[in-house]
Amino acid sequence: MTLRDFLEIPYEELEELNLAAKAQRVARTSLDKLQEERMRYLNDERRIKAVTVCFTDLEGRLHMLDYDKKFLLKSADNLTFDGSSIRGFSQQSESDLRLGIDWGAFYWLPADIFGPGKVLVFGQVLERDGSVYAADFRARLQAYTAELLAKEGIVCNVANEIEGFLFKGRNAEQHYRDTGHFDLVSTGGYYNSLPGDPLRLFIDAAAEAQRAMGFENEKDHPEVAPSQFEMNYSYTEASVAADQVLLYKLICRQLAYKLDLTASFLPKPVTGVNGSGMHTNMSLAKGDTNLFYDANGEEGLSEYGWNYVDRILTSGLDLCLLLNASVNSYRRLDPHYEAPNQIKASAIDRGSMVRIPLGNARSARIEVRSIAPDANPYMAIYALLKVGLEGPKADLSVRKGAKVLPDNIYDAIESFQSSEIIASVLGEEIQAKYAELKTASADRCPHRLGTLIKRSEVQFHHEVTNQYLWSKF
View 1 (cartoon, rainbow, N blue to C red):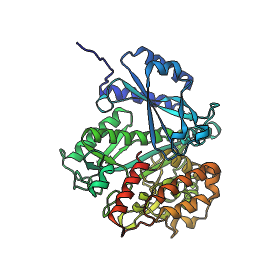
View 2 (cartoon, one colour):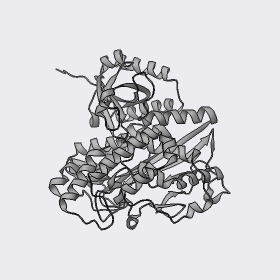
View 3 (spheres, rainbow, N blue to C red):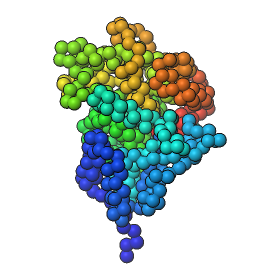
View 4 (cartoon, rainbow, N blue to C red):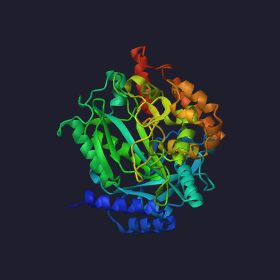
C-alpha cells in the first residue's frame, strides 16, 4: 500500500520545464500572467506538498522557508518573517518584514537531491508597506536591469565561473576546529581525474542536476588545485545568472552531503595551492547587437566596452570589499597562485582584475576575475553594472596600471567606507551597515594574512570556523 505519492520528475522532463520557465523570465513575461500560471499549476498538481521560498541577506547568504502548498496558495500576498533574525536586516524594534513571491524565478527540483514533492521559488524582501527593502540586492538588481531595458533597450548578460573544493566527510568546515586539516578526495589537477574517481563522480552528478534545472551547461572539469572543481554554463540575463550562483552552490552542497562529502566555497581553504574564484563574465546588448564588440577595437572590444572596463578599474579599490567579502578572500589574493590582484585589464595576464577573453560578435565580453565565490552575487553584479555604466571615467593608463588590490580586509573596508561612488551606488545607510558587518567579522579572525601565515593553531581553527559560519552560502 502506497501512503505517499509525491512528485518525482525525470531529469529530461525537468530540463524541459525549467528551460521553458527560464525563457519566460528572460522574455520578461508579465508577472501577473506567471503568477496565474504557477498558482494554477500548484493547485492542480496534487503531488506537490511544499514550496521552498528562498531569499538572501545583505551578505548574500541563502535563507529558505518551506511553505505548505495549500497555505501558500491562500496567503501568498501576506507572507511575513522576522527581519531582526537576519544579519544586516532590520533592527529588533522594527523586525517584521514582508516576503513577496517572484513567480518568474520558479524551479522544479531533482527529487533524488532535494526530496520528492517540492518546488522552489525565489522571494523578494519587502518593507511593511510593500515597497522594496533596501538591503535586498536581488530586488535592486532586478529593478536596475528592468530600468536599463525600459529606458535604453539594454540587456546585461552574465555568466559566472564558480570554483570550489570537495573534501571527505560531511560538514568538514565545521569539523576543522577538531581535525586541523581537510581531507582531499582527489590529488589530480587541471582536467586531470579518472572517470570513476570521487571528484569526477561528484562533478558528473552535479552537472546533471544543473542541466536539469535549466543551467544550459557548457563544460565541467577538475580545476588546478587538487580536489578543486568548476562547472561552466551559458550566459543569461543578469538577475537569472545571480540566482544560478546560489543554486549552483546549493546543488553542490546538497549533493556532497548525500555522498558523505563537503563542497566548500571558501576562497582559500587550503594553503599552498590555488584558491577558488567566481570569475564573472559580463556583456551588454541592445537587440541582437553586442555593445562590447568591435572587430577593429583593441582586443576586439568596443570603445563602449573599454569605457565600462575603465570605470570598474578606476573604482577597483572601492569595489574590492563587495567582490572579496571575507577575511579568507584576502588569502586568495596571493600573487603566487594566479591571484587576480592587479588593478588592470589584459587579454592574457590572468593576474589582472579584468581580463578580455578572445571573442566574436556573439561572445565578446569582459571577465572580472577578482571576485570570490562567497561574495553576494546580486550586490557584486549590481555594483559592477552601476559603476561600469555610471562610475567615474579614467584615462587609458589605468588599464595597465601598477596598483594592486588590498592584501587584507581592513584596507578594503577603509576604501569602501570612504568611497563616494559606493555611497552613491548602495546608499549611505547600506554602505555603513555592510562595513559594520564586515568589520565585526574581521575582528573575529587574525588581522593580517599573506603567503606566510604565522599564528597559533587555535587562531587558524577560529579563522576557518568563523569564516564558514558567516559565509556559508
